[in-house]
Amino acid sequence: MKRRNRGTNGFTLIELLVVIAIIAILAAILFPVFSRARERARAATCMNNMKQLGTAFTMYMQDYDAVIIEQVGLPGVFTNRIWWPYLAYPYVKSYDVFKCPSWSGSMRICYGPEPPQLRIPFSYLYNKMAPTYWALNPSYAGKMGFATDLYLGALPDARIEDPSGTIWLVEAGSRTTGPMEDRIAFGGQQAVYEWHLDYHMNTYMNSASGYWRRVGNPHFDGFNAVYGDGHAKWVKWKSTTPRMWTIEAD
Image 1 (spheres, rainbow, N blue to C red):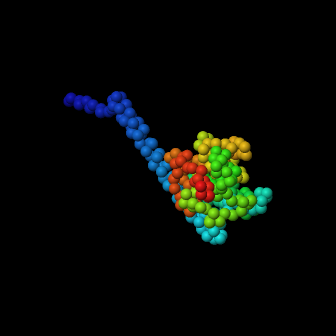
Image 2: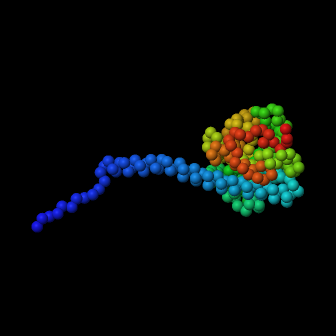
């Protein structure tokens, strides 16, 4: 009897290399697409967070005689001071709202006894532009953002001359050094327009603390912002003007 030899079928080395090359090309094409899709989902979640915060501030003002304040406590006493996220919490019911999925830093939002020195993951800053902060724009000296605190007092909504055009809250972080680090302390909840221009005002703040107040660009070279009327939208990096950071009209 004759024995029939069975040949074995398989890939040659060349065929295997071609398949690997095709897979590598497809991966190179698709991975950036998937990455952008994930970032769009994060940006959408972040936008939803900021819309909730805008609504929370609107409700806060309705409950407190149409005024808003960035911090409460006693002037000069830090052991019982609390900042705006703690004030907004009853209206959002979750501290997760203050965290962008793309990044966050650890922020102290309460020095008070209930609870003591509360820290939460945090991504958003308050427009704290004060009359003396306009080093790059001297013509705006004397104008204010939503600058309210223990010394300046509360801000009536009637003083906001262009609510829909004035930035209230922004996403934080550093353009050059990445997200804020876990070194946030007093004042970290505040954003200042000058840091949006990669500028350090060493005349009144050192360069390290300046990073605490940076406006970031975590989403497609831009950031989400809440405006004075409570609406939120995406803003392109460095597209803002000084007028957008003051409650006073030109």
